[in-house]
Length: 109
Length: 116
Image (cartoon, rainbow over all chains, first blue to last red; front, side, top):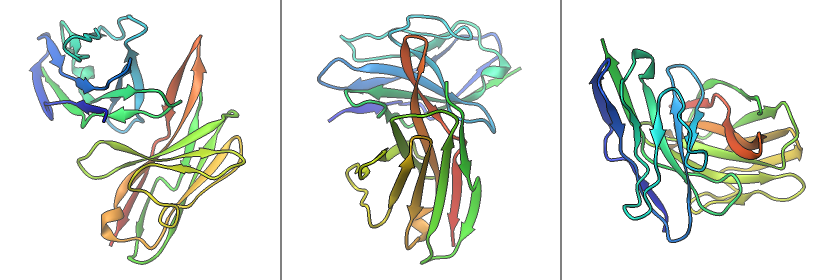
């Protein structure tokens, strides 16, 4: 069965410090991995996907198939990064995502 | 991209009653998805709503409890039937739409239901 694990419920970091959100998955095929973000009082939105290999708002994530991980990283956290972050896996079905439990990030000045 | 509007945004309901949530999309989409987010939990897919056919439900969800309509390519409803306090959740409508040369899942703002 496919599963997405985010071990940290809460990450509290200081502004300017690096932040890393962990995501591990279990899936037998070739998954498509995403990071979604939900800022306070806003809707859930896509932050980035592994196939794009791009940096969004300073965040990057690399798919490591050997470790079945897709950790999200940012070298210098900003206060506006405070949000709920969800790692998600799309296996084969169109539009169906398996979400992790989410990590609340709090960036303090 | 896709802009999704959900109604109601929140409601307080009595045990045993039913509530219908509406989802309107600003463009035609083939499939729409209904997710549930229980308090302190992640999102769980309830069902996929296909236009012109019955919805496809995920394990643990049944049509009698969560009937879904999909009358056209821009609209869907989810009914939460015979509600109990365990149904208190945020219900989210989502669609996959094209962004550039790929697709992306877009979400509505959610409908927060509290069952007393």
